[in-house]
Image (cartoon, rainbow, N blue to C red):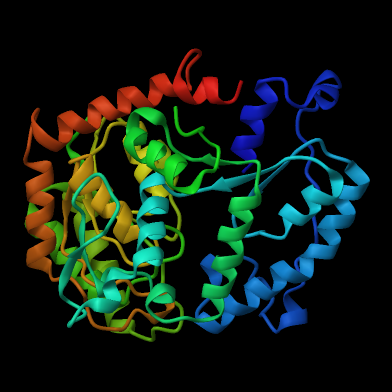
Length: 401
């Protein structure tokens, strides 16, 4: 959202502050964690360890409603741009008589696929959770199983109701900003507009022996799965950088000892390097030595990979990630699937590995073993398109004018 504010300020949308030499102001609001029974320091969904904590975070967003409304009344903005998780801001905009723009951090493809899944409910007609079916309404034939559909779509819960409020606020908004670009998702941008009747604008992003491995800021895999990844990476024979987020309360000291020893051995042999908890992802991906990424298919990671022209080994875990995988593999054809089969909220991930070392090594070899053709070539072309789209005269640049 801060990057989005910077884009608008560059286009002269924040004139008074800009003329004072201060384009963007931030206002810090106290996060009332204790009021809903959240532990101190848990202020982000990436820090939660159970679905119950997600419900409490959603409750906090409702508690913040009054504070934010007072802030808007004091500041008297001319437009509100808000993340999708704050559907009640559409009411504030109506009271103030100003437009509200809805910022959607995932893809047009995911939005369209999710819309048709909720509308037609094809998964409810399947005899088995593993039976494949095509998502209706899409211009490409995209097959999926019931297990790959989001948990809150398969089984109604508190978050389902929150999402329904989000979709209603989208309908009532002036328009939607997508973290994407026309050259990447033109077919689905058009489908979104024709299906939902909502204005939308794409404002998304601007060499090859090392594989980057990361599952984002939220997902903490069990040690048994990390051990399988370690063997898979080593057996692939390709150099790698692997970012691991520690799983709180796992209690598997032997597993952690294995990873420490493995990391030291890979470092000494100059075949791999482990970074614990956080890494400057885009900086690494943009390095000339980077040749591909193993990704959980979070949309931000997909876009960052595309922006530097890297193909992907796809390993979705939950939420929109399975739709994103289908887009990367079946539509863009710049990814190799590792074989993830079930959409499961990250706090519900069990202790057993979901993907074995043989499948991991096979996917890495398929991706990194290809030279100028196939996934690598197509990814480079999309990377070039991504850079052009945010330059002067590009589609995302023009959408902000």
